[in-house]
Amino acid sequence: MTGAQPAGLPPREADSAAASAVKAMQAEGRHADARERYAELVARHQRRAGRIAFHYLRDGAEADEAVQDAFVKAYSHLSTFREELPFEVWFTRILINGCLDRIKSRTRRERWMVSMPESAPGERDFAERTAGQGPSPEDLVLARERRQKLAAALARLPDRQRSVFMLSHYEGCTSREVSAITGLNESTVRVHLFRAIRKLRGMLTEGNRGAS
Amino acid sequence: MGLLNPHLEDDDLADVWSTRTSQGVAESDRPAEDHLRTCADCRSRYTAFTGWLEGVRADAHAEADELLGRDRLAAQQAQVMRRLEALEHPARVIAFPKFAAPVAAQPGGRRRWIAVAAAVGLITGVGLGRLLEFPTGRDQFVARPIARVATPVAEHRAAVQPASQLNDEAFLEPEGTSSQVRVPESLQYLNAVTPSARDYDPR
Image: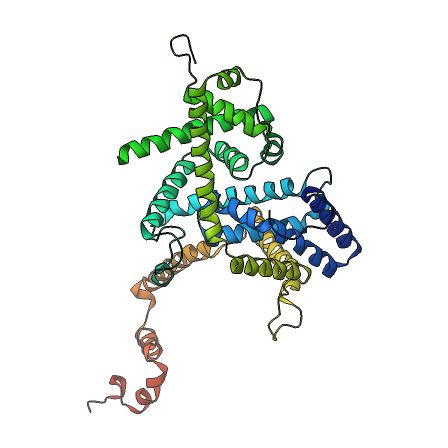
C-alpha cells in the first residue's frame, strides 16, 4: 500500500477512521471537507486497486476507468459502509465486481465486433525503448513473453479461482479477507487456491515444454 | 505421497503452500508438513516451488507497476476528485429558447392523456356506429346505380304509348321541346338565330 497514513495508527485502523470521518462529513453536508479527506484514502489504495484492475482487465485504460468508477461508487455509497469491515475489503469488493461487469460487457461486445490487431499490453513506442539504464532488450523480451504466458494461463482459470489466487498471492490477503471480499467461505477459498495453483503450474509447465 | 513414493508430490506441495498462504502462518499441522521437516529432498523441491510462485508474483507486480507510473496515478486521482465534485452538481438540461419551460419539465403526461382520449373516442365511435347501423358510404354507393337503372325503364314506359292517342301537333310539339332540351345551354343562342327545319317553306 502507498500513500500517507495518520501517525500512530496501523493502516487498517487509519482507513476505517478516515472512512468514518468522511461518512460523518457527508452527513453534515461538509462535502468539500469530505472530498479532501477521501483523497487520502484514494492515494493510499489507488496503486493496489490499479494492479488488481489491470490483472483482471489486461488493459491500462480500462483498468484506469474501473478504478475511478470504484472510487466514485465507494464515495457515493459510503453511507452503507459498516465500520466492522475493513475499508480495504469493502472497496476491493466494489472494484472486483466492477471489473467482472466490464469483462462481461466486453465479451458481449466482442461477440459482435471484429477485433483489430493491437500491440501487446504494456508495449512502449520506439523512443521509450531506446538504450537506457534498464534491463537489456533480450531480458525485456523474455520477461514480456513470460508475463504473456502467465496472463494467458490466469485468463484460463475460472473466475473464482482467479480472484482467490490474485487476492491471496498477489495482494497477500488471508483466507478470511478473501472470504469477505468474494463472499465464499474460508474452506472454499483454500480449495480454490489449491486448484488454481495446480492448474497454473500445469499450464505453465506444459507451455514451457511445448516451447522447448 | 504414497507407499511406493514416500516423497511429496506437486499437489502436496501446492496444498502445503495454499494452506500456509491462506491461513497466514509459517507452518500448519498437515501430515505433509511433518514430512517436509524431515526430508531434505522435498524441502528443496518445496523451496523451488515457492520460488516459482514468487517469480510469478514478481512478474505480475512488475508488469502492473510499469503501467502505474506516478504521473498516471496523479492524473487518476485528479480525475476521481473531479468526478466527486461533479456528483454534487448534477448536469442540468438546458431548455431550447423557444420553450418557456425546461425540456425535462414538459407536460408529457397531458399529451399522453390527449392521445388516449382520442383513441378511446375513435373506438367508441366505431363501436356505436356498428351498433346503431348508420348507413355507410358503401350502402349509398350501391343504391345509386339502382336509381339510375330505374330512370330509363320509366322513360321507356312513357315512350311506348298507343299511336292513336297522338295527333300531328302533339307528335311535333314534344320533338321541338325535346330538341330544345337536348341543345346545351351554351349553344341555345346559336340555335335561336339559326333557321330550323320547321321554318323552311318550300313555296
